[in-house]
Length: 248
Image 1 (cartoon, helix red, strand yellow):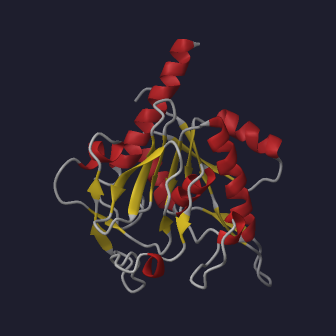
Image 2 (cartoon, rainbow, N blue to C red):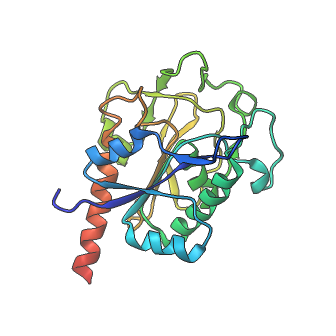
């Protein structure tokens, strides 16, 4: 690839505790996967000003919204379930602002884990707050004793996910208790667990490169095949950039 897109990554955040200062951090798997896929990763710090954040987005070609703890359902008009372990307040406020600007601009975006959930919610969808209660017949989607826990994946034909995985048995990592319920307008489900739980979504607008995976293709338990999702995403971002240059 001759052109390497600049792809932003939101950072995780930990508030100060006692003598420990607050700090931002990023699991290296995200930036490593983007670099391998042919992009230049850029970490986006938590900043307060909308104008400053807009300036950063102007310089980027796409954004990957990383995984983490849970969204606070009270921010979307739901009660707080006892199983919910919310993101740090400052990170969630920033992530929601960032995703709102991304959706408004229809900027290329790839949401992973809670990043996919936030993409769905911001675009108009909603969430199941606790799979064991909301979908009692579902398979286990989180095993605290086995970080490499995996389950099967069923992909929709004619989608990015089908281009990545093709046919045959597919298994992906699974580490979540919340999941997408109603999918936002303009998005389609592109992969599910055999129990019906949504594992991937994709924009149906051919002019918007936007997708999400509930599983973690950047994780230590990911396969080489999982990493191809990043390659497909970056190819779509580069293609969009090229078409914009040709039109200009």
